[in-house]
Amino acid sequence: MPRFPIKEAEVAALAEPLWRGLQLNSVIYPNPPVNLMALRIKSLAYKNKLETSLAKKACAEAATTAKDEALEDLIEALKSNIRYAENTVNYDDNKLKLIGWAGRKTATALTPPGHRLLEAPNQSEGWVFLDWKAPADGGVPAAYKVMRRERPAGAWEEVATAVISEATLVEQPRSKELEYRIVAVNKSGDGEPSNTVMVVL
View 1: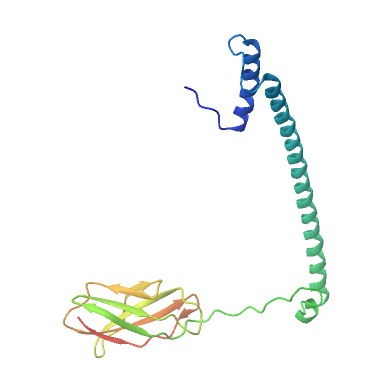
View 2: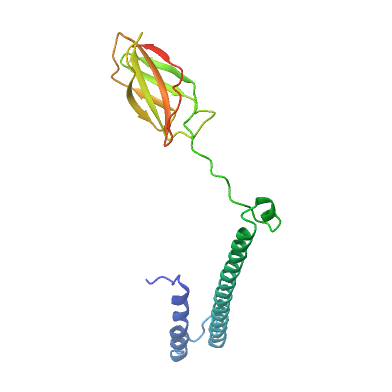
């Protein structure tokens, strides 16, 4: 059994053959609940509304295109006058503020990250979880070097790199006194090392 169409175009396409079929076969279908005249009027009413809707849509699209073109024209005019104003006052911020604009921002050099607080809240045989705070000063870190050495005066070595402010290190040396510290880094270089924490695994 066919299903009644859902799409608007399919509904519209069904109206004509249904109306014509009922008209040509009135002996078989003598008393439809919506008489043929009313059905025809409803079909024509839909077609008129459709044509009006399409015309309005075309007008709206044309209006939107015209609005976009006017916006582009305005943008070019504004940019031209802003360039003129910037050059006229040599990017003087106070003078540019008079026209709702601003001068060039002074570029700030990237600096190494600052100091941070390191903790080792969890540890067990062969592994340690390190947690640290992001630097409160200096440049923004791009990554963190996790450094380790054997106490009391072993050489510091990089054992991991992290991009978040925590790391879990596994397969660490056992039965030794170890120290860990964090060094935040960015394009400007290495920041100051963190405090050290001692761990015995």
